[in-house]
Length: 346
Image (tube, rainbow, N blue to C red; front, top):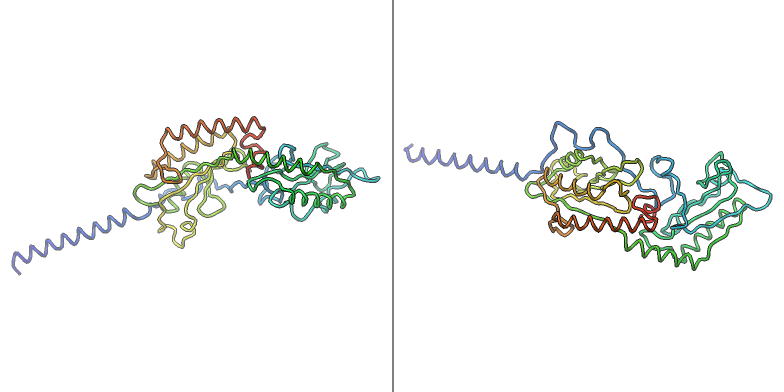
């Protein structure tokens, strides 16, 4: 073999090695980032269950909430309330009898329906409970929620359910005027629709994509824990049982993939349901901090839903507008994060 042939063979080998190396480098560069092996991809020290909103239903929650959070406590500000007086010689109804008389479902159309009894021992209104005795009852249906305002058909269903319960406990109900309550429901719905803010940030990858494990690990370092749904993590509120401060979401199909490590995700979302979270939690400020931190550590950029970059000035404007919204809700006795606000904006 001549020197020329040997030289060409060596040069060809070098080129081939360079091509192989470049291919391997490109493959690694484009592969989804993986979680670090030194810490688990998921919750930090202790896994928590995602808080569940219970304001829009009177059915039992999937896990036990604190005593205050478990009580529906009707309020005339957002509820139609009908009173039920006991008839005849009976001066009290047992909790067992009241529970047996409750309707099978605690909804009227798209609105939650509730029953409370006046406890003769504690002298407070509460959901009927075994071993207690009640001197009167009241039923309620919510005037409005995110499904809209209470209408005439739903009001009629409320009357039917209340009458059936009253008949079962030998009581007589007294209802407010339907026309007035429906008008009140429409006004409340208009207010709620005009002041219902839900904010979303998107963090998009600039270079390499992310695996589900990498996302989980990055979010866990900032206090997020796994949610109950695939592709969902939450930042819990200070008080157990309340709505999460923030929700982080990513492709649920990637989270459910047979080999999640090979799933390539290029964007994640941060969501804040303003009315559901107490102002004292500093939810928007924390949303900004989390978005900035994730963008820095994951090599991403923060955008709105349309892909437009969110500047600090834009976020400042949003923050100022939110303070005005908080003030307006408080003036209406519907402070963000309160029981009434969580029920209305659900």
